[in-house]
Image 1: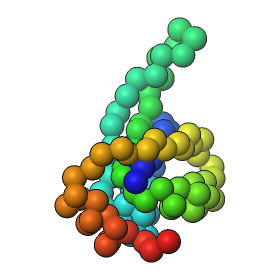
Image 2: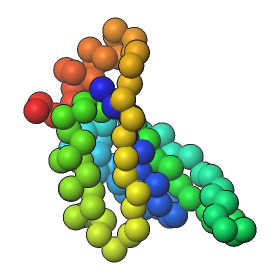
Image 3: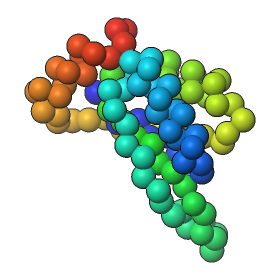
Image 4: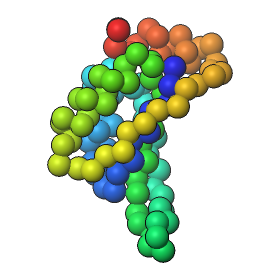
Length: 99
């Protein structure tokens, strides 16, 4: 399992991406955080959409989201999940897209 982060600057887009991910069984649920990015003395608004999914789905998710939302600058990356509750892991295995 991995946690996928999709960083961009529009909350409405994050909601659209979330709906796409859930409808296509790439995520059971998503989280959306509003953040501030400090870069070279500038404050920028960013939206972080994140969710847990199967590691083998990363390339598919990355490519489909980039294609579907191509006009938006997206930063997509993942980190491994080293521990997860047995019940939630089983729910993910049973309900996410088969690989």
